[in-house]
Image 1 (cartoon, rainbow, N blue to C red):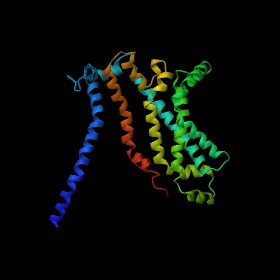
Image 2: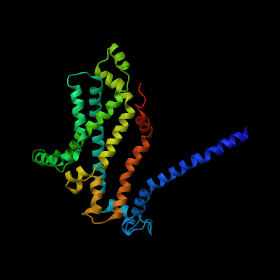
Image 3: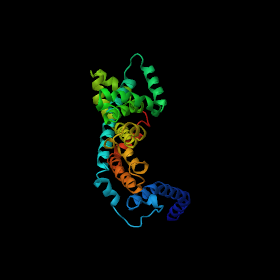
Image 4: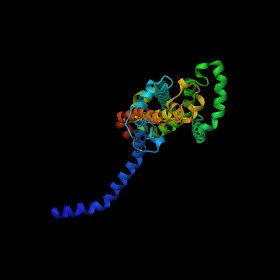
Length: 291
């Protein structure tokens, strides 16, 4: 029996060896850019600008520059980005789940046409409307400066308009997998549509809601095109727009602070992934088996 087990284990080794090698190659390929960015952030001159991967001397000068320089409001950029991303994620997912519940469970005239129109709108990329958005909010800033061009409130409205459709479609696909028997049993017990939503559907959709909120947060956190056009003042910039100024104009070609800012900006996203790992796994697999 021992001989049979040893032969079986030896037979598995060649077939699994290439998988381990392939996995290690993918890990190195994925971690190499992160290593280069961290290495550049610890170099005084910036490893990206010197052409060297390893820093000659390890220094935290770039990190201190981000928070101690009066001309670089990096802390303000982080606060703007976290607040903007968090508020957009919560509101867009909340509206999206309301719309998904209506599309999935309520029967009303024009439901099919509304779904088709929502899908058609998602086909066109958002940057096609950049010129129209710019002109609209430029005129709006004269009447309501709080939500006009250059304000975080106005940019939030733009993000909400672009993300609600995609969230509604994603959440509707999950709600369709919930058995209709739950609705019928709740209606027999006298539950209203609002009670069915809050007491039955919302607890069942917690994993997918967490995943959708996280995706919305990350998408807003990393968004650059709309923010770079919309936000004009240095103090109102997001992290993506602010870091671009290190290598694209305002602060010159400063790859060291750029890399340090990238590392600091990645910390909230990594923390979110680690804290919500349980919900992410269950949310991604949710709906794969119906019923």
